[in-house]
Amino acid sequence: MKKNWAIRKDAEAVSPVIATILMVAITVVLAAVLYVMVLGFGGGGTQTPTMQVTKSSTSNGLKFTVAGITKDTQWGDMKVLLQNGSTTDSWTLTTAGLTGAAGKTYNGGAQAIGGGKNVYMNVTDLVGNGFINGGDSILLESSAAFSAASQYTLTLIYVPSGSEMTHSTFTG
Image (cartoon, rainbow, N blue to C red; front, side):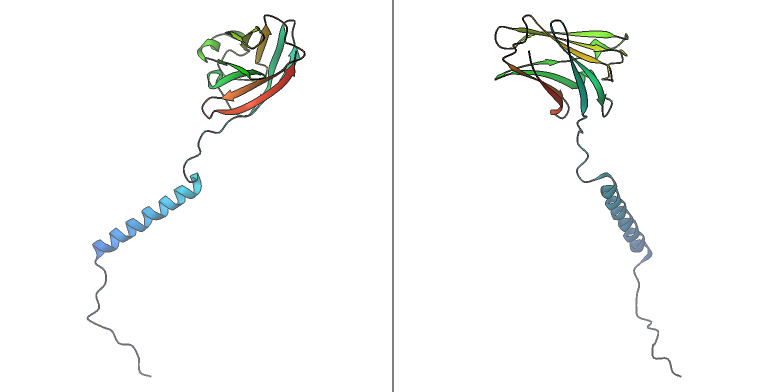
């Protein structure tokens, strides 16, 4: 039987240098595609932790105790908002003010919250590590009793993302 194909002597292949460059380029493109697939497109952004708080009455106000939080978060990454109708006041915390001693309390000072009331905010870090942990608390006390006729909303904001971690509504 006779072979139907013939070996061509005039055919040229790609030079070894070009072949090496092409192989490296293909490898780089594949690595980039895998990187994007694994880590996602455009980065992860800042994910806001969520937290749960329990509310209890004190002699001059309310105590909000952290029941749980989804990721390690420093107190300095949280902002406390208190709203009464159209009036909103806020406290920005500092992590340094809560580190160094177990049971350390940070005094956030007073804010006027409508109706001539000053509301004082104190944060207690039970461990004293500067991080929000279960059992830590936020105490809101008023110079005059919170009005039973008014509705107040406490909102905790995660500063890096600007999103809400939790909120709690209460009356006086």
